[in-house]
Length: 625
Ligand SMILES: *[C@@H]1O[C@H](CO)[C@@H](O)[C@H](O)[C@H]1NC(C)=O
Ligand SMILES: *[C@@H]1O[C@H](CO)[C@@H](O)[C@H](O)[C@H]1NC(C)=O
Ligand SMILES: *[C@@H]1O[C@H](CO)[C@@H](O)[C@H](O)[C@H]1NC(C)=O
Image (cartoon, helix red, strand yellow):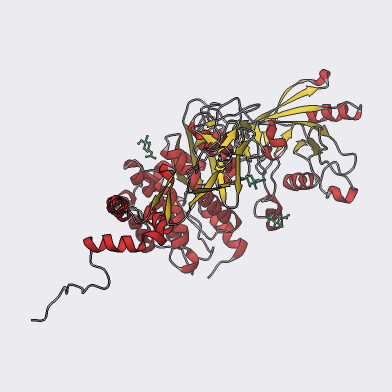
C-alpha cells in the first residue's frame, strides 16, 4: 500500500515525535518583545511591551518614531486600502505613519501587507481579547500568502487589547499620538561576541520553507564568514531530529525514516515511502553536516560549514539524484576537510545505541533560559533569543549586529550590505563634496552615520557633519586638493604639489583660483640667443634655431650639428641613452622621436660599433659540418 497526501502526513505525525516532547508536555514558545514608548499626548505617556511579528523586518538594534493612525474604515486591514482611496505615505517633514489595526478576520501578515502597500511605516495590531502577548506568525503552508509575505519589509508588533483601546481613544479625541518603537534591547549584548545558531535541514525538496532557507544560507554565507573569521561571532548549526515511538521501531515506516533503531528520524522528503529518497537519507546528511562543522571547528575553521552546505546544495541536489554519500565526499574533499574524521564522527547508523552527536542535538532542542523549544524550521537564535522576522540577509545581520554593544560592532555591520538608504535623502545631513561626488554619509544597520570617508586610499578627517578634509600629499589625489587645474588640447596641468597649491613651472598665479601662462618669449625667460626664434605655448614655449643649428633646451642655446666635438660629446650621451633605452624603452622612444631627423645617421654610426646592424652578415648559430 502506498500512502499519499494527508493520510500519510497524519501517519508521520503519529510516528515521529520531537525530542521536546520528552521533557515538556507542551512545546515552550517564547514571545520575543520590543518596547513601545508613547511620547505624546502627555496623559498616556509610558512604555509598553509589544510582541515582534514573525515576518517583515524588525529594526533590530534601532528604533523608529511615528504617529499612530487608526483607519475609520477597514480598521482590521483585511482589504486593500486602495479600495477606500486611503494612503498613509508620509509627507515631507511629517512623522511616518504607524497604522493601528484590529486583530481578526484575516491573517496578520495580510493586514501588514495591506498597510505597507498603503504607505504605512509600521503596523501595530491591537489584540481583540485580553491575554498575554502572542507572536504574530505566518500562516503555515499557505502558498498564496507566501508570495506577499516575502515582500513585507515593514516591522509589525502586537499590542494588548487595553493598550489598543487607550490609543484609539486618544486618536478619536483628536490627539496626535506619537510613539517610539524600540528594538535596541530585543537582543541582549552581554559581551563583544555574538553567539548564534541556526536550526536548519539538508532536505532540499520540502517546498517554500526549504527554498527560503537555502536562499538565506547562500546569501548570508559571506557575512557569516566575515563575522566568524574576525572572532566576532560563534556560530553553531543545529538540526532537528524526530524519534520513533518504541512500539513502532520495527515498522517499515520507521525503518525507512530513522537510523539507530528509531532514535533519529526525519520525514520522508517526497512523503512517499516507496520511491525516491527516504527520511533516513536526510538524517544521515544532517548528521554529516553536523560532523563537517565539528571537524572544521576542531581545525579552527568553523566557517567552512557554510561552504560545505552551500556547495552541497548546488552540487548534490535531490532533483539530480546526487543527494548521497559519494557526492558529499567529493564536496568534503574539495574543501580540504578530513573525510576520515567526518566518517568517524558520524558513527554507525545501524547500531542499537545513541549517537552522541545527534543525542546532543535532541537535547538542545529543548528550550533553555530565555529561549523557547525549537519545534519549527528554520529557527534562528541570537544571543539565546529567538529571532523574529523575515529570514533574509539584511534583516538577520541587523539582529546579529544588535547583539554587539553599540560602537563595538564589526565593520560588516556598518557596511553597505545592511544599508538603510537614509543617505539618499538629503545626504543624511552629513558632509559632502558635490563637485567631487564624495560623501561622509554611510548607511548602517543602526541608521546612517556621518564619518569622513576613505577615497582612493586617502583618509579624510573631520567631524563628518560639517567638514572633512585631507591633509598631506594625498590631498592631490582627491579633486586636485582644491587647487587650480586645467587642461587644453590634451595637455593637463595641476597646481597641487605635496598637498599644497603652487602653480606649475610655466605658470604664475595663486595656485588656487588661477594660474596663468607665462609668456617665456616676451618675458625674456628663455630662447633669447642670437640664432633663437621663440614661440610661446600654453604652459611652455617652442624654440627653434636658424640655419643648421640645433636647440639644446637644457642649456637654452643653439649648437652646430656638424661640429666634431659636439659629435663626440653626443656619442657619449648616446651610449648612456642606449643603456637607458634597453632598461626603459619609453625614454628611448621620446628621444628617438624628438631627434630623429638629426640623429638617425649618428645613431646608426654609433650603434654599428656595438652591435651588428641589419646589413651585416649574421653569425650562424648552428653548423652542419
Ligand atoms: C514581490 O516582489 C517581487 C520582486 O520585487 C515582485 O516581482 C512580486 O510581484 C512581488 N509580489 C507581490 C505579491 O507584490
Ligand atoms: C567549536 O570550537 C570552540 C573552540 O574552538 C568550542 O568552544 C565550541 O564548543 C566548538 N563547538 C562545537 C559545536 O563543537
Ligand atoms: C557619485 O558616486 C556614486 C557612487 O560612487 C555614483 O553611483 C553616482 O552616480 C555618482 N554621481 C555623480 C553625479 O557622479
